[in-house]
Structures are given as C-alpha cells and as structure tokens.
Length: 338
Image (cartoon, rainbow, N blue to C red; front, side, top):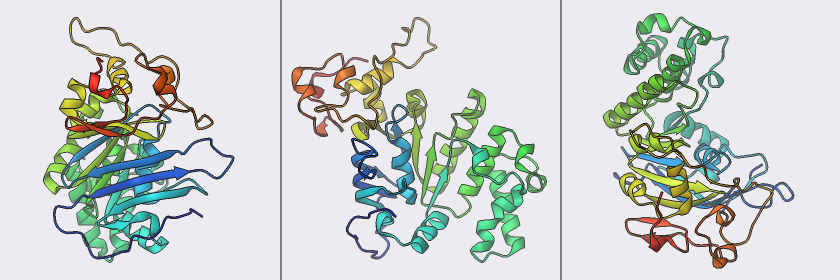
C-alpha cells in the first residue's frame, strides 16, 4: 500500500481556466533500505488547458515516475508527500474507485511502446470500444465512435482496421491506435511518456503532428515526457528540466533554449546533435547521473558541472526565480553557455 499524505478534500470541479494538472511539492520515497534518496523530491509542475508542457532529462531522472503519479501509478510501498491534483482533486488521496474514474474519464496516458498497451490476441475494435461500452455506450455507438477516432489519427479504412489485430499494424500505426484510445473519453489531460522513442523519424513527426493538432482542436492539456530537447523545442510551450528527482530549471521554451540558467540544461543542449552546416559536434556531459543509492550533499549535479564551486558541493541550491522562469543553481544569475 502507498502511504498517502493528508487528504486535500474532493470538493467540486475547479472553475474554468484552472490548471488541467497541478503537482505541488510531490515527494516519492521508497521503503527504508531501498534507496538513499527520494525518487522525486519536492516536484512542482503545472499544465494549463490547451498547453503542451515538456518534462525532460536523462534516463533515471524521475520523469516517468512523475508522469505516472498523475494516474496514481506509484512503486509498491512508496511513501508520498505533496499533492497531485486533477480537476481540483488530489489523486494521492483517492480510493480505487475514484482512481478508476479519473483514468477512464479525465486523464489518458500514451506509453513509449504501443505493443505493451494492447492485448495482442484481441482485435483493435475491442480495444477501442471496451471503455466506451463500460461507460454505458451501446455497441453500435461505440463502434461509430471508434471509427471516428481512427479517422482523426489518420488510420485509413477505419472500419477495416477495427477487425485487425495489433500484429497487423506497424509501430507507428499502432501508436496512432493507442492515441485514438486515449482520446476516446475526451480527457482534459493527456500524458505522453516518450511516445515516439521507438519510432523512425518520419513516423515520429507524424505522431507529433497528430498530438499537436488534437490538442489544439480539443483544448486538451498535454504533458510530454522526453529526453530529446530538440523534440521538446518543437512541441512544448514550457519545459521542466529534471535531474536526480528534482526540477532544476523551468521556463518558456524559447527562453530556455536561448539562455539556459542551469549547467545541466546547457549540457543537454550541447550534447544534442545538429544537422545545420557548420554546427559544432555534440559534447557529452561528463560523468554519470546520480543513482538512487547515492545521496551526495549539496547540488546533485556538482560532480559533473564545469562551473561548480566549493559551495555547490556543500549547499543544495533552491529553485528560485530568474527572469521568466526558475532555476536551482547558485550561479544561475551569471548565465550559462550551452
């Protein structure tokens, strides 16, 4: 069982224009002896209706745990603090029945591997209509809705696609099917956990175009999780950068890429390959990410940071405002070159 924080109260739906997602001070810690530091340490994050927010960082930074917490999908035995609010209600205090309602009506998730999201033995039509029929929709109405959704994500011969099984689709086409299923209940929030990583570049662009168009048409908030900063720059309105379970920087996408305030953000930008003529070769970030078995004093990035000072290894920086965003770095006001 997950240890939950003090209930925030169910209350009524939030007023129009309120965030589709609010994460306040979210901490996730494994049982004693399992890890030396929290998986997530005081995460704050917002997604507004119709907004795409990026969550970026290396593998192991805590991105996937953060986004899965939105659906109450936390590691077994995890202890949590803070709040994760959907439509003004705290997911961390919900009963199983309430969580089931949130997962089927208010929030949908698109995972990295579409084949892990579907039953390989069942037809795509069953996968798409199951949730609709469970909500009381007639079989004929559910089928018509499934055809409409497949058309919306660019599946040709939608009626025929309903009769096919997952192995008859390419990876890109099956990811379209998964996106269609995620949109079936017209959720207020869509969480995409690296949905294009396993796809080729052309298919990746098509999937991103679909997500962007559907977000604009439906006013859905989109939390887009990726390790690809170039992709985040093309998709997101704002970006949160994670390292070792903490948000180390957040600001509007254009400002983040033009003038990063945290050395880790600058390192991610410098390590991104570019195809422009005369572009410098990518420079990898030295060292390795901090593991869960390590809890270094001071800034978790200090051992890898070319700008680190003695203070950085002794005193953990707080997330403070610089310009139009926030950064957790003792030297954030100096400006960091990618």
